[in-house]
Image (cartoon, rainbow, N blue to C red; front, side, top):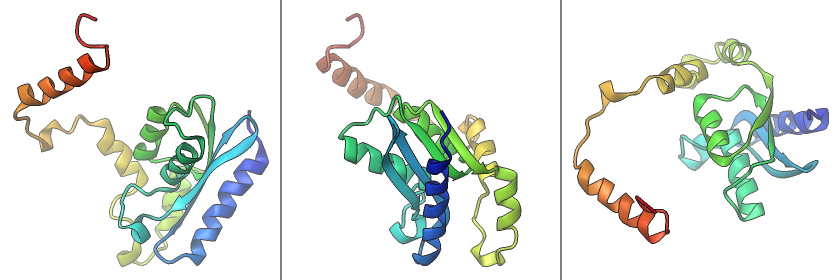
Length: 164
C-alpha cells in the first residue's frame, strides 16, 4: 500500500545527499508494517563501492536493523526508478513491492545536464540492458567441477544436499 510520507522521506534523503561529498541524489527507504526499517542514499564514490546505490544502502540498513537477510513483507520507496542492480537486490532480499518517483527516462534527462566528467559511466537504462543479456560473450568458464563440489559439500552439510 503506497504511502506518500515514505516517498517524501526517500526524496528528502536524495536531497540530503547533495550536502555529502561523494554522494549522489538517489534516496530510498525500506518499510515494514508501516514503519521505516532502513534508509539510504547513494554513497558509491564516498565508499569506493560501485554497488552503494540508495536502494542497496537502504536494504543493507534494514537487514542490519532487523538482523536478517529476508525482507519479505517489506516495501521499498525510492526517489528514482531502480536500475537492474537495485531491482535484483530487492528480489534477492524478498522485497516484493516498490514505489519510485522519477522514472529512468526522467532521471537520465536530468543527468544529461551534468558536465561530461561528472556523468555516470553507465546509465540506469544501459545497466538494465547489460543485465538482460547473459554476459557469456564477456566471460569464460573454468574449474566448474571444483566449484560445484564445494557447493555440493555445503548443501550436504546444510541438510539439503542432492537426494535429501
